[in-house]
Figure 1 (cartoon, rainbow, N blue to C red):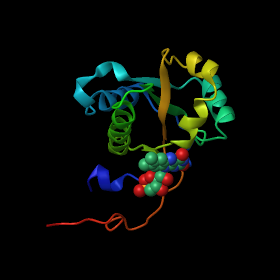
Figure 2: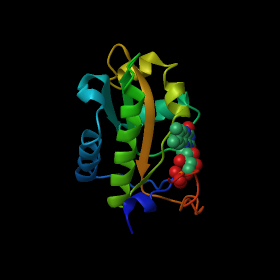
Figure 3: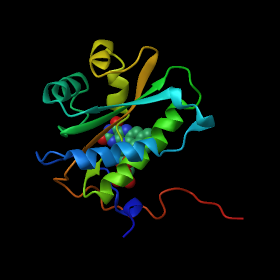
Figure 4: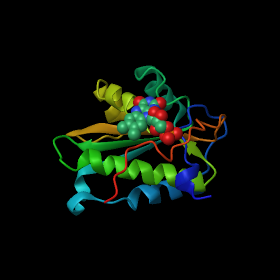
Length: 160
Ligand SMILES: Cc1cc2nc3c(=O)[nH]c(=O)nc-3n(C[C@H](O)[C@H](O)[C@H](O)COP(=O)(O)O)c2cc1C
């Protein structure tokens, strides 16, 4: 079945590490995301696998990344009208690609907001001056299925 439909928010991961080839494909998916007005300087990505840095993220964000061994931190330029939108479409690209690669993930906004209270950590994670964290995407091998909710009628859809 299509990866879009197989993607589910997953909040429990095994300890298995994601290999370099898959990480590169996830980065490629990030790079292929739509880009508002082609303003390529309003978004950047930190890819985090270092265990000490991952632990600092968990400690600073009340375990918002669910101990995943890989976290994509998507940062956007403060005040940009495109930044958060770019970050969301890029996160979805990454999450759908993750499914294709046999991985799972979840869109994390709460942890992203918490990260913005820790500028030193963001700097250590490579975030540029004038940016803020918009989305965190923990990624790993699923240790749970995620919700099996029927999503076919989640939103109101009007056809005319
Ligand atoms: C804007 C937005 C913010 C979200 N923030 C969080 C979050 O902070 N923590 C979390 O665990 N999940 C978060 N999620 C994931 C949602 O809870 C999840 O997508 C929703 O429950 C629907 O489940 P599904 O993705 O399996 O369809 C967020 C999703 C979106 C789109």
